[in-house]
Length: 321
Image (cartoon, rainbow, N blue to C red):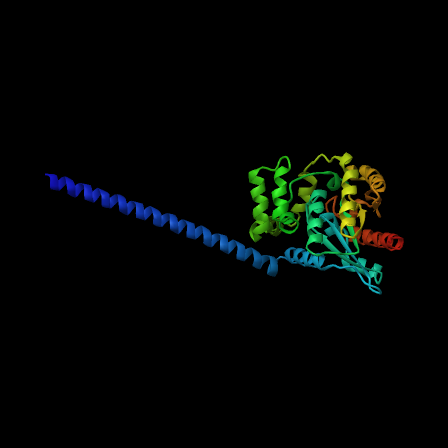
C-alpha cells in the first residue's frame, strides 16, 4: 500500500513539473514572437520611411539640413532656417523662395506637423546645441499655435526632443506616466515616432480627401492663451541671441477668424519683445479658393505667400546687423 501511494505522488510530481515546463516554453515562445513582431515593425517602418514615404524622406532631409547650417562667410549668402508646423509645409515653396532671395540668402525649411511654440523652444535649443548655427531663424507659426499648449506630437518627440528634454516634461501639468512613456518611445522607436504618418498614409489611400473633412468637422479647440505670447517671444529672442543667431517671427495666413483677430496683437507683442515680426499676407486677403481645407494654403495661395515673404525678407534682412 505505501508503495502505491509513493508511485502516485511521483506521478503527480512528474505531471506538475511537465506542466511547468510547458508553461515556461509557451511564455518563451510568446516573448520571442513579440520580439520578432517589434523588430519587424521597426525595420519595416524604417524601410517605409526611407523608400516609400515621401513625407518621411522630406522630414529626414530637412532635419539633417537644419543641423548642418552654419553662418555664411564673406561673399556667401546668409543662411536662414525657417521652422514651423503644417502651415509652413503647405505655405512656402522653398525652391521658389530661394529663387527670389538669392544670392543674398540661402533658405532652408524644417516643418514638423502639429507643433506649437513649446515644441520649437525646446527643439531649437537642441538643434543649436547639436551644431546648427544659421545666420537667421524664422519662427513661423499661426497665432493659435503660438499661444496654445499641447503635448508634443510623435514626430516632434522623435526630432525635437532628447532624453534630457523628455525628463523635463515630467514637470509639466497634464503629462502623466502614460503620456511620458509614449513620448519616450516616439523618440527612440521608428515605429512609434512614425505611427501618425503611417495612419495618415493608410487614411489617404482609402479616403483621399479625409484631411479636408477632418479640418472642417473635427477641429480641436485648444483655448490659446494670448497673454503668454510676449514672454514667449522674449524667450525666443533670448535663446537665439545666446547662440549668436538673428531671429524673426512670421505669421502665415490662415482662414481662421480667430487667427486674423489675434494677428495685430501678436505683432504688437513682438515689437514690445524686440522681435521683428510680420504677416506678409493677411488671411483675410485670400479667398477660399486659395486654401486646401480652409486653413492650409493650396498651390495658388502658396505662390502668393512665397512671393510676399520674399519681398519682406529682402527688405528686412537689408536692415539687420
